[in-house]
Length: 603
Ligand code: SF4
Image (cartoon, rainbow, N blue to C red):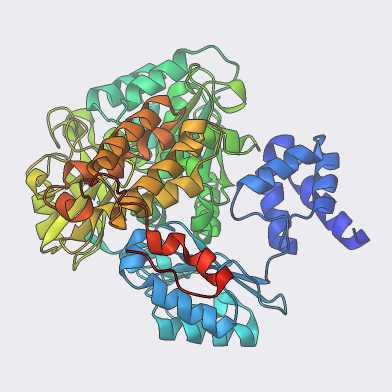
Protein backbone atom coordinates (compact mmCIF):
# COMPACT_ATOMS: atom_id res chain seq x y z
CA UNK A 1 0.00 0.00 0.00
CA UNK A 2 1.22 3.47 -0.86
CA UNK A 3 2.24 5.55 2.16
CA UNK A 4 -0.43 8.11 1.27
CA UNK A 5 -3.17 5.50 1.28
CA UNK A 6 -2.00 4.08 4.59
CA UNK A 7 -1.90 7.44 6.25
CA UNK A 8 -5.30 8.50 4.89
CA UNK A 9 -6.88 5.24 6.12
CA UNK A 10 -5.25 5.68 9.53
CA UNK A 11 -6.50 9.25 9.63
CA UNK A 12 -10.07 8.11 8.86
CA UNK A 13 -9.84 5.55 11.67
CA UNK A 14 -8.60 8.26 14.06
CA UNK A 15 -11.51 10.49 13.07
CA UNK A 16 -13.81 7.78 14.43
CA UNK A 17 -11.72 7.37 17.59
CA UNK A 18 -10.19 4.08 16.34
CA UNK A 19 -13.45 2.69 17.69
CA UNK A 20 -14.25 -0.89 16.67
CA UNK A 21 -17.97 -0.18 16.88
CA UNK A 22 -17.63 2.57 14.22
CA UNK A 23 -16.37 0.12 11.61
CA UNK A 24 -19.29 0.92 9.28
CA UNK A 25 -18.41 4.61 9.20
CA UNK A 26 -14.74 3.85 8.68
CA UNK A 27 -15.39 1.41 5.82
CA UNK A 28 -17.83 3.82 4.14
CA UNK A 29 -15.33 6.70 4.41
CA UNK A 30 -12.51 4.57 2.97
CA UNK A 31 -14.78 3.40 0.14
CA UNK A 32 -15.70 7.00 -0.69
CA UNK A 33 -12.07 8.09 -0.63
CA UNK A 34 -10.55 5.25 -2.69
CA UNK A 35 -13.49 3.68 -4.57
CA UNK A 36 -13.00 0.41 -2.68
CA UNK A 37 -11.83 -1.04 0.63
CA UNK A 38 -8.74 -2.90 -0.55
CA UNK A 39 -7.15 -5.77 1.36
CA UNK A 40 -4.34 -3.43 2.33
CA UNK A 41 -6.81 -0.87 3.67
CA UNK A 42 -8.53 -3.63 5.62
CA UNK A 43 -5.21 -4.55 7.27
CA UNK A 44 -4.72 -0.95 8.26
CA UNK A 45 -8.28 -0.60 9.59
CA UNK A 46 -8.01 -3.84 11.58
CA UNK A 47 -4.72 -2.69 13.11
CA UNK A 48 -6.13 0.72 14.04
CA UNK A 49 -9.33 -0.52 15.70
CA UNK A 50 -7.81 -3.63 17.29
CA UNK A 51 -9.72 -6.12 15.17
CA UNK A 52 -8.79 -8.80 12.63
CA UNK A 53 -8.67 -8.32 8.88
CA UNK A 54 -11.14 -11.15 8.39
CA UNK A 55 -13.69 -9.25 10.47
CA UNK A 56 -13.30 -6.16 8.33
CA UNK A 57 -13.51 -8.30 5.21
CA UNK A 58 -16.69 -9.98 6.40
CA UNK A 59 -18.26 -6.55 6.88
CA UNK A 60 -17.12 -5.21 3.50
CA UNK A 61 -18.35 -8.30 1.64
CA UNK A 62 -21.78 -8.03 3.28
CA UNK A 63 -22.85 -4.56 2.17
CA UNK A 64 -23.55 -3.97 -1.49
CA UNK A 65 -22.26 -0.37 -1.48
CA UNK A 66 -18.84 -1.53 -0.23
CA UNK A 67 -16.39 -3.29 -2.47
CA UNK A 68 -12.99 -4.95 -2.21
CA UNK A 69 -12.34 -4.41 -5.92
CA UNK A 70 -11.91 -0.89 -7.26
CA UNK A 71 -15.07 0.52 -8.78
CA UNK A 72 -15.35 3.36 -11.25
CA UNK A 73 -14.84 6.94 -10.16
CA UNK A 74 -18.57 7.23 -10.81
CA UNK A 75 -20.90 4.36 -9.89
CA UNK A 76 -24.34 4.35 -11.51
CA UNK A 77 -26.78 2.19 -9.54
CA UNK A 78 -29.90 1.80 -11.63
CA UNK A 79 -32.90 0.80 -9.56
CA UNK A 80 -34.56 -2.38 -10.77
CA UNK A 81 -37.47 -2.58 -8.40
CA UNK A 82 -40.62 -3.95 -10.01
CA UNK A 83 -42.12 -0.46 -10.36
CA UNK A 84 -39.00 0.71 -12.22
CA UNK A 85 -39.43 -2.36 -14.39
CA UNK A 86 -43.04 -1.40 -15.14
CA UNK A 87 -41.96 2.14 -16.01
CA UNK A 88 -39.20 1.20 -18.43
CA UNK A 89 -36.11 -0.03 -16.52
CA UNK A 90 -35.06 -2.42 -19.27
CA UNK A 91 -35.00 0.19 -22.04
CA UNK A 92 -33.06 2.63 -19.81
CA UNK A 93 -30.58 -0.08 -18.76
CA UNK A 94 -29.98 -1.07 -22.39
CA UNK A 95 -29.51 2.53 -23.52
CA UNK A 96 -27.01 3.26 -20.74
CA UNK A 97 -25.21 0.00 -21.26
CA UNK A 98 -24.81 0.67 -25.01
CA UNK A 99 -23.70 4.25 -24.43
CA UNK A 100 -21.05 3.09 -21.97
CA UNK A 101 -20.05 0.00 -23.94
CA UNK A 102 -20.26 -2.22 -20.85
CA UNK A 103 -22.79 -4.70 -19.50
CA UNK A 104 -24.51 -4.44 -16.14
CA UNK A 105 -21.98 -4.88 -13.32
CA UNK A 106 -18.97 -3.80 -15.41
CA UNK A 107 -16.68 -0.77 -15.33
CA UNK A 108 -15.56 1.11 -18.43
CA UNK A 109 -12.00 0.16 -19.52
CA UNK A 110 -10.68 3.59 -18.42
CA UNK A 111 -11.96 2.91 -14.88
CA UNK A 112 -14.21 5.98 -15.00
CA UNK A 113 -17.79 4.67 -14.78
CA UNK A 114 -19.34 1.53 -13.29
CA UNK A 115 -22.87 0.54 -14.28
CA UNK A 116 -24.78 -1.70 -11.92
CA UNK A 117 -28.27 -2.27 -10.62
CA UNK A 118 -29.67 -2.09 -7.12
CA UNK A 119 -32.96 -3.00 -5.40
CA UNK A 120 -35.58 -0.40 -4.47
CA UNK A 121 -34.01 2.98 -3.67
CA UNK A 122 -37.21 4.53 -2.32
CA UNK A 123 -38.18 6.43 -5.49
CA UNK A 124 -41.03 4.28 -6.80
CA UNK A 125 -43.19 7.40 -7.27
CA UNK A 126 -40.67 8.79 -9.76
CA UNK A 127 -39.30 5.67 -11.42
CA UNK A 128 -37.17 4.72 -13.24
CA UNK A 129 -34.55 6.21 -10.95
CA UNK A 130 -30.88 5.73 -10.19
CA UNK A 131 -28.25 6.65 -7.62
CA UNK A 132 -25.08 8.09 -9.10
CA UNK A 133 -22.46 8.26 -6.34
CA UNK A 134 -25.38 8.97 -4.01
CA UNK A 135 -26.93 11.64 -6.25
CA UNK A 136 -30.51 10.69 -7.12
CA UNK A 137 -31.73 10.98 -10.72
CA UNK A 138 -35.40 10.34 -11.38
CA UNK A 139 -37.89 9.89 -14.24
CA UNK A 140 -35.26 8.35 -16.49
CA UNK A 141 -35.88 7.59 -20.13
CA UNK A 142 -33.46 5.94 -22.57
CA UNK A 143 -32.64 9.37 -24.02
CA UNK A 144 -32.04 10.92 -20.58
CA UNK A 145 -29.91 7.94 -19.65
CA UNK A 146 -27.74 8.37 -22.74
CA UNK A 147 -27.47 12.12 -22.18
CA UNK A 148 -26.41 11.87 -18.57
CA UNK A 149 -23.67 9.46 -19.54
CA UNK A 150 -22.43 11.88 -22.21
CA UNK A 151 -22.42 14.61 -19.55
CA UNK A 152 -20.67 12.43 -17.01
CA UNK A 153 -17.94 11.56 -19.51
CA UNK A 154 -17.19 15.29 -19.76
CA UNK A 155 -16.99 16.15 -16.04
CA UNK A 156 -17.33 12.94 -13.95
CA UNK A 157 -19.24 15.02 -11.42
CA UNK A 158 -22.71 13.57 -10.60
CA UNK A 159 -23.64 16.74 -8.71
CA UNK A 160 -23.64 18.63 -12.01
CA UNK A 161 -26.48 16.37 -13.22
CA UNK A 162 -28.83 18.12 -10.79
CA UNK A 163 -30.15 20.83 -13.07
CA UNK A 164 -33.51 21.15 -11.32
CA UNK A 165 -34.48 20.44 -7.73
CA UNK A 166 -37.64 19.02 -6.18
CA UNK A 167 -40.17 20.65 -3.89
CA UNK A 168 -40.08 21.42 -0.13
CA UNK A 169 -36.79 20.76 1.64
CA UNK A 170 -35.49 19.02 -1.48
CA UNK A 171 -34.60 22.59 -2.45
CA UNK A 172 -32.60 23.10 0.76
CA UNK A 173 -28.96 23.97 -0.07
CA UNK A 174 -27.80 20.91 1.89
CA UNK A 175 -30.13 18.60 -0.05
CA UNK A 176 -30.40 20.09 -3.56
CA UNK A 177 -31.99 16.98 -4.94
CA UNK A 178 -34.22 16.47 -7.96
CA UNK A 179 -36.44 14.24 -5.78
CA UNK A 180 -40.06 15.31 -5.39
CA UNK A 181 -42.07 14.80 -2.20
CA UNK A 182 -45.32 14.04 -4.02
CA UNK A 183 -47.38 14.59 -0.86
CA UNK A 184 -50.91 13.97 -2.15
CA UNK A 185 -52.77 14.04 1.15
CA UNK A 186 -51.76 15.91 4.32
CA UNK A 187 -53.11 14.59 7.62
CA UNK A 188 -53.00 16.11 11.10
CA UNK A 189 -50.24 13.96 12.66
CA UNK A 190 -47.35 14.37 10.25
CA UNK A 191 -48.05 17.13 7.83
CA UNK A 192 -49.57 19.77 10.11
CA UNK A 193 -47.19 22.59 11.21
CA UNK A 194 -44.89 21.58 14.06
CA UNK A 195 -43.17 23.92 16.51
CA UNK A 196 -39.76 22.44 17.47
CA UNK A 197 -39.55 21.93 21.24
CA UNK A 198 -43.33 21.98 21.81
CA UNK A 199 -43.58 18.20 22.41
CA UNK A 200 -40.41 18.06 24.47
CA UNK A 201 -41.63 20.84 26.80
CA UNK A 202 -44.83 18.93 27.43
CA UNK A 203 -42.84 15.76 28.09
CA UNK A 204 -40.54 17.48 30.58
CA UNK A 205 -43.57 18.67 32.54
CA UNK A 206 -44.30 15.00 33.21
CA UNK A 207 -42.33 12.31 35.01
CA UNK A 208 -40.71 9.75 32.64
CA UNK A 209 -43.23 7.08 33.68
CA UNK A 210 -46.06 9.49 32.87
CA UNK A 211 -44.66 10.01 29.36
CA UNK A 212 -44.71 6.24 28.85
CA UNK A 213 -48.26 6.23 30.21
CA UNK A 214 -49.25 8.89 27.67
CA UNK A 215 -47.85 6.80 24.80
CA UNK A 216 -49.65 3.72 26.11
CA UNK A 217 -52.92 5.67 26.44
CA UNK A 218 -52.63 6.83 22.85
CA UNK A 219 -52.42 3.13 21.85
CA UNK A 220 -49.69 3.99 19.37
CA UNK A 221 -48.51 0.88 17.53
CA UNK A 222 -45.11 0.75 15.84
CA UNK A 223 -45.48 1.90 12.24
CA UNK A 224 -42.87 -0.50 10.85
CA UNK A 225 -45.48 -3.11 9.95
CA UNK A 226 -45.52 -5.47 12.93
CA UNK A 227 -47.58 -3.01 14.96
CA UNK A 228 -46.04 -3.74 18.36
CA UNK A 229 -47.36 -1.28 20.99
CA UNK A 230 -44.76 1.49 21.32
CA UNK A 231 -45.52 2.26 24.99
CA UNK A 232 -45.05 -1.38 25.97
CA UNK A 233 -41.69 -1.47 24.22
CA UNK A 234 -40.60 1.67 26.07
CA UNK A 235 -41.79 0.25 29.38
CA UNK A 236 -39.73 -2.90 28.83
CA UNK A 237 -36.62 -0.84 28.01
CA UNK A 238 -37.10 1.46 31.01
CA UNK A 239 -37.53 -1.52 33.34
CA UNK A 240 -34.66 -3.68 32.04
CA UNK A 241 -31.39 -3.68 33.99
CA UNK A 242 -28.48 -1.82 32.38
CA UNK A 243 -26.21 1.11 33.04
CA UNK A 244 -27.06 2.74 29.72
CA UNK A 245 -30.03 2.74 27.40
CA UNK A 246 -30.26 3.62 23.73
CA UNK A 247 -32.87 5.00 21.36
CA UNK A 248 -32.45 3.87 17.75
CA UNK A 249 -34.43 5.26 14.87
CA UNK A 250 -34.93 2.81 12.04
CA UNK A 251 -34.63 5.00 8.93
CA UNK A 252 -33.73 2.02 6.76
CA UNK A 253 -37.01 1.67 4.87
CA UNK A 254 -36.03 -0.88 2.27
CA UNK A 255 -39.32 -2.63 1.65
CA UNK A 256 -39.78 -2.46 -2.13
CA UNK A 257 -42.35 0.20 -2.92
CA UNK A 258 -41.94 2.15 0.34
CA UNK A 259 -40.79 5.76 0.27
CA UNK A 260 -42.84 7.57 2.92
CA UNK A 261 -39.90 7.79 5.39
CA UNK A 262 -37.93 9.57 2.68
CA UNK A 263 -40.57 12.31 2.75
CA UNK A 264 -40.85 12.34 6.56
CA UNK A 265 -37.06 12.64 6.88
CA UNK A 266 -37.11 15.52 4.41
CA UNK A 267 -40.12 17.41 5.77
CA UNK A 268 -40.56 16.27 9.39
CA UNK A 269 -36.97 15.93 10.62
CA UNK A 270 -37.63 18.05 13.72
CA UNK A 271 -40.66 16.03 14.68
CA UNK A 272 -38.61 12.85 14.36
CA UNK A 273 -35.58 14.13 16.33
CA UNK A 274 -37.91 15.45 19.00
CA UNK A 275 -39.63 12.05 19.25
CA UNK A 276 -36.23 10.49 19.88
CA UNK A 277 -35.44 12.99 22.64
CA UNK A 278 -38.83 12.33 24.26
CA UNK A 279 -38.13 8.60 24.11
CA UNK A 280 -34.69 9.24 25.65
CA UNK A 281 -36.27 11.14 28.52
CA UNK A 282 -38.92 8.45 29.05
CA UNK A 283 -36.55 5.47 29.21
CA UNK A 284 -33.49 7.18 30.70
CA UNK A 285 -31.22 7.24 27.66
CA UNK A 286 -28.60 9.80 26.74
CA UNK A 287 -27.82 8.53 23.24
CA UNK A 288 -29.86 8.23 20.08
CA UNK A 289 -28.81 6.91 16.69
CA UNK A 290 -30.62 7.49 13.41
CA UNK A 291 -29.80 4.54 11.15
CA UNK A 292 -30.10 6.13 7.72
CA UNK A 293 -30.17 3.79 4.73
CA UNK A 294 -27.26 4.35 2.33
CA UNK A 295 -29.76 5.06 -0.46
CA UNK A 296 -30.80 8.25 1.41
CA UNK A 297 -27.28 9.51 1.83
CA UNK A 298 -28.29 12.67 0.00
CA UNK A 299 -30.19 13.67 3.19
CA UNK A 300 -27.22 13.15 5.55
CA UNK A 301 -25.82 16.69 5.62
CA UNK A 302 -29.33 18.12 6.00
CA UNK A 303 -30.18 15.84 8.94
CA UNK A 304 -26.87 16.57 10.63
CA UNK A 305 -27.51 20.29 10.27
CA UNK A 306 -30.94 19.85 11.91
CA UNK A 307 -29.29 17.97 14.79
CA UNK A 308 -26.74 20.76 15.15
CA UNK A 309 -29.48 23.39 15.09
CA UNK A 310 -31.35 21.58 17.85
CA UNK A 311 -28.16 21.51 19.93
CA UNK A 312 -27.88 25.28 19.48
CA UNK A 313 -31.48 25.72 20.63
CA UNK A 314 -30.91 23.56 23.71
CA UNK A 315 -33.17 20.81 22.39
CA UNK A 316 -30.32 18.31 22.26
CA UNK A 317 -27.11 18.01 24.27
CA UNK A 318 -26.65 18.55 28.01
CA UNK A 319 -29.30 19.75 30.47
CA UNK A 320 -31.89 19.95 27.69
CA UNK A 321 -34.28 22.91 27.99
CA UNK A 322 -32.63 23.69 31.34
CA UNK A 323 -33.59 20.34 32.90
CA UNK A 324 -30.56 19.46 35.07
CA UNK A 325 -29.29 15.98 34.38
CA UNK A 326 -31.30 15.35 31.21
CA UNK A 327 -28.66 14.82 28.56
CA UNK A 328 -29.48 13.38 25.16
CA UNK A 329 -27.68 13.59 21.85
CA UNK A 330 -28.08 11.98 18.45
CA UNK A 331 -25.72 10.77 15.75
CA UNK A 332 -26.53 9.47 12.30
CA UNK A 333 -25.29 6.02 11.35
CA UNK A 334 -25.15 5.51 7.62
CA UNK A 335 -26.05 2.11 6.16
CA UNK A 336 -24.46 0.71 3.02
CA UNK A 337 -27.10 -1.06 0.96
CA UNK A 338 -28.43 -4.07 2.86
CA UNK A 339 -32.19 -4.64 3.03
CA UNK A 340 -31.91 -6.97 6.02
CA UNK A 341 -30.70 -4.04 8.17
CA UNK A 342 -34.34 -2.90 8.35
CA UNK A 343 -34.84 -5.85 10.70
CA UNK A 344 -34.27 -4.40 14.15
CA UNK A 345 -31.66 -6.86 15.42
CA UNK A 346 -29.77 -6.69 12.11
CA UNK A 347 -29.89 -2.90 12.35
CA UNK A 348 -28.36 -3.13 15.83
CA UNK A 349 -25.58 -5.40 14.50
CA UNK A 350 -24.86 -2.86 11.78
CA UNK A 351 -24.74 0.04 14.27
CA UNK A 352 -22.25 -2.00 16.31
CA UNK A 353 -19.95 -2.22 13.29
CA UNK A 354 -20.74 -5.77 12.24
CA UNK A 355 -22.39 -7.41 9.25
CA UNK A 356 -26.12 -6.82 9.39
CA UNK A 357 -26.84 -10.29 10.70
CA UNK A 358 -30.12 -10.71 12.60
CA UNK A 359 -29.69 -11.90 16.20
CA UNK A 360 -31.53 -14.68 17.98
CA UNK A 361 -34.39 -13.58 20.24
CA UNK A 362 -34.84 -13.59 23.23
CA UNK A 363 -33.29 -11.47 24.61
CA UNK A 364 -35.31 -8.78 22.82
CA UNK A 365 -33.71 -5.39 22.11
CA UNK A 366 -35.59 -3.60 24.91
CA UNK A 367 -33.94 -6.10 27.26
CA UNK A 368 -30.52 -6.37 25.61
CA UNK A 369 -29.90 -4.53 22.39
CA UNK A 370 -27.22 -2.11 21.16
CA UNK A 371 -23.87 -2.96 22.82
CA UNK A 372 -25.79 -5.31 25.14
CA UNK A 373 -27.88 -2.52 26.70
CA UNK A 374 -31.66 -2.03 26.75
CA UNK A 375 -32.58 -0.43 23.42
CA UNK A 376 -35.68 0.96 21.81
CA UNK A 377 -35.84 0.63 18.04
CA UNK A 378 -38.69 2.67 16.55
CA UNK A 379 -39.14 3.69 12.99
CA UNK A 380 -39.30 7.24 11.61
CA UNK A 381 -43.09 7.44 11.47
CA UNK A 382 -43.55 6.08 15.01
CA UNK A 383 -41.18 8.68 16.47
CA UNK A 384 -42.92 11.46 14.54
CA UNK A 385 -46.23 10.29 16.08
CA UNK A 386 -44.67 10.50 19.56
CA UNK A 387 -43.96 14.24 19.23
CA UNK A 388 -47.49 14.95 18.04
CA UNK A 389 -49.04 12.84 20.82
CA UNK A 390 -47.19 14.88 23.44
CA UNK A 391 -48.37 18.13 21.83
CA UNK A 392 -52.01 17.21 21.16
CA UNK A 393 -52.65 14.56 23.81
CA UNK A 394 -53.30 10.83 23.88
CA UNK A 395 -57.08 11.15 23.56
CA UNK A 396 -56.77 13.30 20.46
CA UNK A 397 -54.54 10.67 18.84
CA UNK A 398 -56.67 7.72 19.98
CA UNK A 399 -59.79 9.36 18.56
CA UNK A 400 -58.46 8.80 15.03
CA UNK A 401 -58.22 5.54 13.15
CA UNK A 402 -59.89 2.21 13.77
CA UNK A 403 -60.82 0.72 17.14
CA UNK A 404 -57.59 -1.24 17.60
CA UNK A 405 -55.27 0.82 15.42
CA UNK A 406 -55.28 4.46 16.38
CA UNK A 407 -53.95 7.52 14.59
CA UNK A 408 -53.12 8.00 10.95
CA UNK A 409 -50.91 6.10 8.54
CA UNK A 410 -48.55 7.50 5.97
CA UNK A 411 -48.71 5.38 2.83
CA UNK A 412 -46.50 5.30 -0.24
CA UNK A 413 -48.64 4.44 -3.25
CA UNK A 414 -47.03 3.56 -6.56
CA UNK A 415 -47.39 1.35 -9.61
CA UNK A 416 -50.29 1.42 -12.05
CA UNK A 417 -51.98 4.62 -10.86
CA UNK A 418 -52.05 8.19 -12.08
CA UNK A 419 -51.18 9.83 -8.74
CA UNK A 420 -48.31 7.96 -7.11
CA UNK A 421 -47.04 9.58 -3.93
CA UNK A 422 -47.44 9.91 -0.18
CA UNK A 423 -50.85 9.93 1.51
CA UNK A 424 -51.52 10.46 5.20
CA UNK A 425 -54.85 8.74 5.87
CA UNK A 426 -56.73 7.54 8.96
CA UNK A 427 -56.33 3.84 9.78
CA UNK A 428 -59.37 1.86 8.68
CA UNK A 429 -59.43 3.25 5.15
CA UNK A 430 -60.19 0.65 2.45
CA UNK A 431 -57.99 -0.31 -0.51
CA UNK A 432 -60.90 0.70 -2.78
CA UNK A 433 -60.73 4.27 -1.39
CA UNK A 434 -56.95 4.33 -1.88
CA UNK A 435 -57.33 3.24 -5.48
CA UNK A 436 -59.83 6.01 -6.09
CA UNK A 437 -57.60 8.65 -4.47
CA UNK A 438 -54.56 7.56 -6.44
CA UNK A 439 -56.61 7.30 -9.64
CA UNK A 440 -55.90 3.67 -10.34
CA UNK A 441 -58.09 1.85 -12.81
CA UNK A 442 -58.54 -1.72 -13.86
CA UNK A 443 -56.63 -2.96 -10.82
CA UNK A 444 -55.92 -6.67 -10.72
CA UNK A 445 -53.53 -7.04 -7.80
CA UNK A 446 -52.46 -4.92 -4.85
CA UNK A 447 -49.46 -5.38 -2.64
CA UNK A 448 -50.35 -4.13 0.82
CA UNK A 449 -47.21 -3.58 2.83
CA UNK A 450 -44.85 -4.56 0.04
CA UNK A 451 -43.84 -8.12 -0.77
CA UNK A 452 -43.29 -8.88 2.91
CA UNK A 453 -46.99 -8.55 3.61
CA UNK A 454 -50.02 -9.38 1.53
CA UNK A 455 -50.87 -9.62 -2.12
CA UNK A 456 -54.59 -9.19 -2.55
CA UNK A 457 -56.99 -9.37 -5.45
CA UNK A 458 -60.11 -7.33 -6.28
CA UNK A 459 -62.19 -9.43 -3.86
CA UNK A 460 -60.51 -7.79 -0.84
CA UNK A 461 -60.75 -4.15 -1.83
CA UNK A 462 -63.31 -3.50 0.90
CA UNK A 463 -60.96 -4.71 3.67
CA UNK A 464 -59.49 -2.27 6.20
CA UNK A 465 -55.94 -0.92 6.30
CA UNK A 466 -55.05 -1.58 9.95
CA UNK A 467 -53.02 -4.05 11.98
CA UNK A 468 -56.00 -6.36 12.49
CA UNK A 469 -56.88 -6.76 8.83
CA UNK A 470 -54.58 -5.48 6.08
CA UNK A 471 -51.38 -4.55 7.94
CA UNK A 472 -48.81 -2.42 6.19
CA UNK A 473 -45.57 -0.68 6.97
CA UNK A 474 -46.46 1.82 4.25
CA UNK A 475 -46.02 0.34 0.79
CA UNK A 476 -49.02 0.00 -1.50
CA UNK A 477 -48.09 -1.17 -4.99
CA UNK A 478 -50.83 -1.26 -7.61
CA UNK A 479 -50.80 -3.69 -10.55
CA UNK A 480 -53.37 -3.58 -13.31
CA UNK A 481 -55.12 -6.64 -14.68
CA UNK A 482 -52.59 -7.07 -17.47
CA UNK A 483 -49.81 -7.86 -14.98
CA UNK A 484 -49.06 -11.51 -14.34
CA UNK A 485 -49.21 -12.25 -10.60
CA UNK A 486 -46.74 -15.08 -10.78
CA UNK A 487 -44.24 -12.87 -12.61
CA UNK A 488 -44.70 -10.29 -9.86
CA UNK A 489 -44.02 -13.01 -7.28
CA UNK A 490 -40.94 -14.19 -9.20
CA UNK A 491 -39.59 -10.66 -9.33
CA UNK A 492 -39.88 -10.32 -5.55
CA UNK A 493 -38.31 -13.73 -5.01
CA UNK A 494 -35.27 -12.50 -6.97
CA UNK A 495 -35.14 -9.56 -4.58
CA UNK A 496 -35.28 -11.73 -1.45
CA UNK A 497 -32.73 -14.19 -2.83
CA UNK A 498 -30.33 -11.29 -3.41
CA UNK A 499 -30.95 -9.83 0.03
CA UNK A 500 -30.88 -13.04 2.11
CA UNK A 501 -27.96 -12.98 4.53
CA UNK A 502 -27.46 -16.70 3.88
CA UNK A 503 -27.34 -17.74 7.52
CA UNK A 504 -30.07 -20.36 7.41
CA UNK A 505 -30.67 -23.04 4.79
CA UNK A 506 -34.47 -22.74 4.38
CA UNK A 507 -34.03 -19.11 3.33
CA UNK A 508 -30.76 -19.45 1.43
CA UNK A 509 -31.67 -22.60 -0.53
CA UNK A 510 -35.45 -22.80 -0.18
CA UNK A 511 -36.06 -19.48 -1.91
CA UNK A 512 -34.05 -20.57 -4.93
CA UNK A 513 -36.01 -23.84 -5.17
CA UNK A 514 -39.22 -21.85 -4.87
CA UNK A 515 -38.17 -19.47 -7.60
CA UNK A 516 -37.33 -22.42 -9.89
CA UNK A 517 -40.81 -23.81 -9.36
CA UNK A 518 -42.48 -20.45 -10.03
CA UNK A 519 -40.40 -19.96 -13.15
CA UNK A 520 -41.25 -23.41 -14.43
CA UNK A 521 -44.96 -22.68 -14.11
CA UNK A 522 -44.59 -19.27 -15.78
CA UNK A 523 -42.80 -20.97 -18.67
CA UNK A 524 -45.81 -23.21 -19.15
CA UNK A 525 -44.02 -26.36 -18.01
CA UNK A 526 -45.83 -26.74 -14.70
CA UNK A 527 -48.23 -29.38 -13.47
CA UNK A 528 -50.93 -29.01 -10.79
CA UNK A 529 -48.64 -30.81 -8.36
CA UNK A 530 -46.17 -27.92 -8.73
CA UNK A 531 -48.72 -25.51 -7.28
CA UNK A 532 -49.14 -27.77 -4.25
CA UNK A 533 -45.36 -28.03 -3.95
CA UNK A 534 -45.06 -24.23 -4.08
CA UNK A 535 -47.51 -23.93 -1.20
CA UNK A 536 -45.81 -26.56 0.88
CA UNK A 537 -42.30 -25.19 0.25
CA UNK A 538 -43.47 -21.64 1.02
CA UNK A 539 -44.95 -22.72 4.32
CA UNK A 540 -41.81 -24.68 5.18
CA UNK A 541 -39.60 -21.64 4.54
CA UNK A 542 -41.90 -19.42 6.61
CA UNK A 543 -41.91 -21.88 9.52
CA UNK A 544 -38.20 -22.61 9.65
CA UNK A 545 -36.46 -19.33 8.75
CA UNK A 546 -34.73 -17.47 11.52
CA UNK A 547 -35.75 -13.89 10.79
CA UNK A 548 -38.47 -11.80 9.21
CA UNK A 549 -36.93 -11.89 5.73
CA UNK A 550 -37.27 -15.65 5.28
CA UNK A 551 -40.56 -15.67 7.16
CA UNK A 552 -42.02 -13.14 4.72
CA UNK A 553 -40.29 -13.85 1.40
CA UNK A 554 -42.77 -16.54 0.20
CA UNK A 555 -45.80 -14.27 0.84
CA UNK A 556 -46.05 -12.98 -2.75
CA UNK A 557 -46.08 -16.59 -4.00
CA UNK A 558 -48.79 -17.57 -1.53
CA UNK A 559 -50.73 -14.42 -2.45
CA UNK A 560 -50.46 -15.19 -6.16
CA UNK A 561 -51.66 -18.75 -5.56
CA UNK A 562 -54.56 -17.57 -3.46
CA UNK A 563 -55.84 -15.26 -6.16
CA UNK A 564 -54.70 -17.49 -8.99
CA UNK A 565 -58.27 -18.16 -10.09
CA UNK A 566 -58.73 -18.90 -13.76
CA UNK A 567 -55.10 -18.07 -14.52
CA UNK A 568 -54.13 -21.55 -13.32
CA UNK A 569 -55.74 -23.14 -16.35
CA UNK A 570 -53.37 -21.31 -18.65
CA UNK A 571 -50.29 -22.14 -16.63
CA UNK A 572 -50.41 -25.75 -15.57
CA UNK A 573 -51.42 -28.90 -17.35
CA UNK A 574 -52.09 -32.41 -16.11
CA UNK A 575 -49.25 -34.76 -16.97
CA UNK A 576 -50.09 -37.29 -19.60
CA UNK A 577 -48.81 -40.82 -18.92
CA UNK A 578 -45.16 -41.04 -19.90
CA UNK A 579 -44.80 -37.33 -20.57
CA UNK A 580 -43.37 -34.66 -18.32
CA UNK A 581 -44.52 -31.13 -19.17
CA UNK A 582 -41.27 -29.64 -17.93
CA UNK A 583 -39.16 -31.84 -20.21
CA UNK A 584 -38.40 -30.09 -23.51
CA UNK A 585 -37.11 -32.70 -25.94
CA UNK A 586 -35.94 -30.11 -28.46
CA UNK A 587 -33.77 -28.34 -25.91
CA UNK A 588 -32.46 -31.62 -24.52
CA UNK A 589 -30.95 -32.75 -27.82
CA UNK A 590 -29.38 -29.45 -28.88
CA UNK A 591 -25.93 -30.34 -27.51
CA UNK A 592 -25.93 -33.67 -29.24
CA UNK A 593 -27.05 -32.08 -32.52
CA UNK A 594 -24.25 -29.53 -32.33
CA UNK A 595 -21.68 -32.27 -31.78
CA UNK A 596 -22.81 -34.46 -34.66
CA UNK A 597 -23.60 -31.51 -36.91
CA UNK A 598 -27.09 -32.56 -37.94
CA UNK A 599 -30.64 -32.26 -36.70
CA UNK A 600 -32.25 -35.17 -34.84
CA UNK A 601 -35.32 -36.80 -36.18
CA UNK A 602 -37.87 -37.63 -33.54
CA UNK A 603 -41.62 -37.64 -33.19
S1 SF4 B 1 -34.14 -15.94 7.27
FE1 SF4 B 1 -32.73 -15.38 5.60
S2 SF4 B 1 -32.10 -13.29 6.04
FE2 SF4 B 1 -33.02 -14.13 7.94
S3 SF4 B 1 -31.29 -15.00 9.08
FE3 SF4 B 1 -32.08 -16.65 7.82
S4 SF4 B 1 -30.83 -16.54 5.92
FE4 SF4 B 1 -30.58 -14.60 6.99
